[in-house]
Image 1 (cartoon, helix red, strand yellow):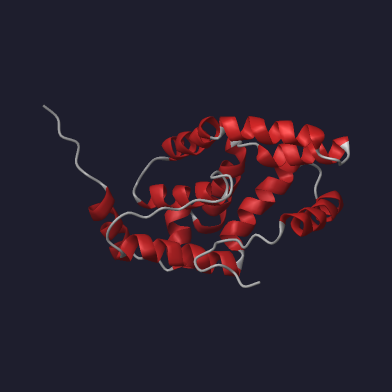
Image 2: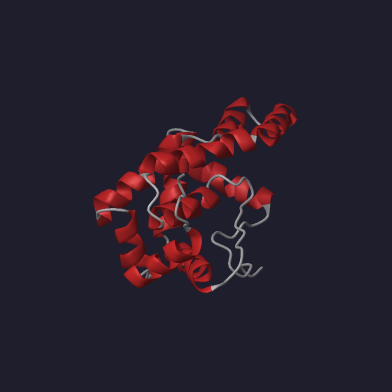
Length: 185
């Protein structure tokens, strides 16, 4: 099955993905938090994902009008794209993290339903705990990649320039398009 146009991470059929990932999880990770941090890194550093992120940023820079981006949960890939875009716009790290954590509040109802679904899922208690861990939204997931980008590149903007082809002119276009001056009385 081909990757959907513009997709940042292709999602194969859930049953196959869960089987593969459960084996990988047991072999490579101590807990769901370590798995999720690795997933976030893979979104930023896998060539296929970097290409998709670059295409996303080009779309936001070059196109007029609104842009909608989302993923299955609206917290992981979407959170990473939002982090990159907000940082390019000059938003401070604390505000970026607060924005990311809004996903948890906005996703609360679906989270409860999914959690209830885990109780009836015919898998081991250990695997249910792993799945529950994947559903969480934790600031340390995003902070881990923010810190890695600072360590490897000196910052998020520098990563966008070095790996995604963003220029100073592109950043200025973004700011001109999406920022407004606050009017004070």
